Amino acid sequence: MSIEEQVKDILARITRVDKNIITREATFKEIKADSLDVVQALVAVEETFGIEIPDEEAQKFQNFGDFVSYVEDRVAQKEKV
Image 1: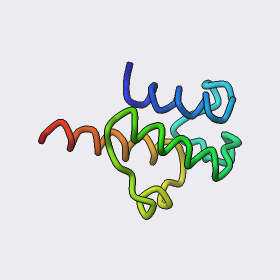
Image 2: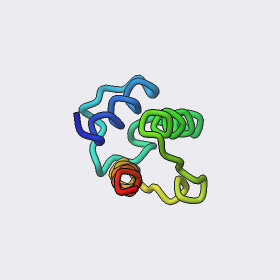
Image 3: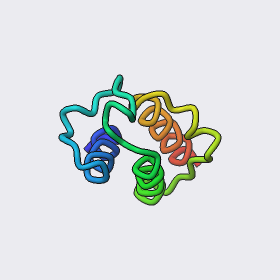
Image 4: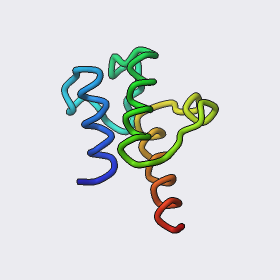
């Protein structure tokens, strides 16, 4: 399963929305994710992938695609070490 699919599963579970509405272009508002949902998703993703997502970085995410790209980059960096 790809990183994107795993992150999508986490977000869908937390927000209780159909995974099909979670596209790379979808904003958290369109996914109906409130600020608590986003924080819970960040923590779950950090635990799942063994990475850290600083608050300053998380605030830059404009949509689901930004979130996934960031996670993919951090996981790739971690694997190089």
